[in-house]
Image (tube, rainbow, N blue to C red; front, side):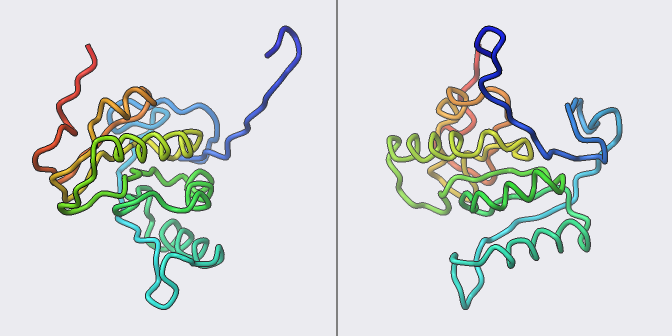
Amino acid sequence: MDGKRITDIYTSPLDFDGSPGIIKITSSMFNGKKMLIHGGNRHQEYPWLGDAIPKWITEMDLKDMSDNLNYNFLRTAHYPNDMFVYELTDKSGIVVDEELPNINNQEFSSEVQEQQLKEMIRRDRNHPSIMFWSMGNETNHAADSKFAFAEDTTRILTARMVTGGSAGTFVKR
């Protein structure tokens, strides 16, 4: 708002439990209803196309996950996905753990990881389906969680199968 004049409006398609709107999360409860997490990883690639997949295949994947596999959770295995994926997860009520592009023992400098983390969060922070930012998975070079916390204090930060690094050492006091 600028005085009494509306300057910006954002309408979210978020719908986790059949009642779009504000969500209240406490433990495993979403809007007062128990929500069992069921899902898996998604690699955004097809062998004959690589990463350059058309939107209809992405839609088919997410529809299959939501309708046939009953997924309500998705981890973007090892890298941020196309922004279209998050548009679909917002609409279908799939909770997302978005990962940085780091896996195994790739040596990224702290500056590169900080830049990648900032770009990921700034690009995707308006997608309500993204509830987790991953600092790393299966790596000994996880990003420092203080970079994520400096960008977004509202999401849960995760790290999976991480050795070394400082993914889990930052604590806000």
